[in-house]
View (spheres, rainbow, N blue to C red):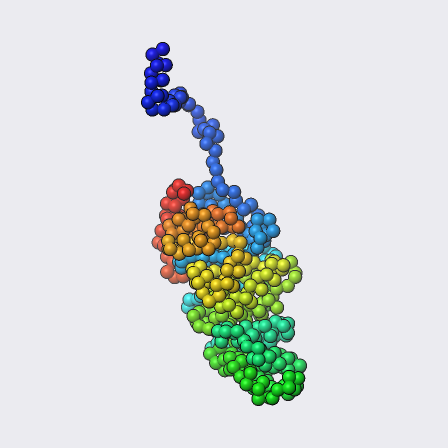
Amino acid sequence: MLGKLTDSFTSTLFGRVETTRLPVRTSSGQAQAVYLPTAAPGLGDSGVIIGREVYSGKGYVYDPFQLYGQQLPAPHWLVLGESGNGKSALEKTYVLRQLRFRDRQVVVLDAQGEDGVGEWNLIANALGIKSIRLDPMAALDGGVKLNPLDPAITTTGQLSLLRTIIEVAMGRGLEERAGFALKAAHAHVLATVKDRQPVLNDIIDTLRSPDLSAVESLGVQVGEVQAWGLDVALVLDRLVDGDLRGMFDGPTSAGIDLDAPLIVFDLSHIDRNSIAMPILMAIVGVWLEHTWLRPDRVKRIFLVEEAWHIINSPFVAQLFQRLLKFGRRLGLSFVAVVHHLSDVVDGAAAKEASAILKMASTRTIYMQKADEARSTGRVLGLPRWAVEIIPTLSPGIAVWDVNGNVQVVKHIITEAEKPLVYTDRAMTEDAVAERDRADQQLAAQPRI
């Protein structure tokens, strides 16, 4: 009776009294069923293994071709993060693992390098493949050439490529009269040059001396059409006799194997901050669209480093936007690697950049500073916990957002892959050990 009165009095003062339970003695094997382990759902077990999910320790498998149409509306992928945090290592191991499937083919635009070669040179050599080195100095001495007027490219594609090159170089759209002069010159060259591949010099010569039939059809003077095409001729002359000479002023070099499992365009000798880079991106993009993409059931990956050079130019961005839409029907996965999202969303091609970003259903974000992480989170619609953790990520760990399935993933590199992946001599054994220690510390942290 006294106990009931005490409980009643205590309940009135402090609220409901918890029931006292006797301790339970059991084995660890039986106790594990009391609090069941939980983890975010994975992406399935079919495809390429990336590493492990940090909080659960589960293996993390990703393949856009397996997920496309079910969990992914598009197979394209955006990789973001500060330098030195593992973007390059992820790209390389991903490609090496994809190439173990027989129906895969990869093209890489390699914009970075060391010791005079691109950083993908080791991987290409290991696979017995010679990189396609685009270098103005080497091109003058029998190096690689890509012809914008290659017969493998359709007539429409050639004209579109010529316009894009000119617009990128001029920084503005082509006026109607200049566009007509270019179109007339292109048509004249294709109609008259039959014994060899047409080249840019043919277009320049025709612009300087317009075809009379084109003039007569409009009822204007030769001098007028010549004036319309003068700026166009001057821009194209840069590819023939300027700082980009040698790479695009002749027939396409023989020996470029478009059936090789890996095709590497080495752009490491091109100034990444010059107008040459977006011009190169435009030429390579259109050339691949018309010579590489084919309806043969091969699943293709197009990986572009320093991709902001593409997305930051409205004219090149529009070209690649079309390539992405076209490529989805033919099994193309476009991988864009960018340091900062602000490089593109605040650039000259903000509209085109937004359209391309929307096509990327997979986003991988390595460590960024807090301000950049918040900006990235707003643009990509990341959950708050992911935005808060991005500045704390150690190298090799990234936030993966696969169409709304957001997880923190530790990228795992095998011993066999390390010699091919760690091409930067600054990556020492001590740095690798420090990375592994940081990974263990993060894995021990509770999830936000």
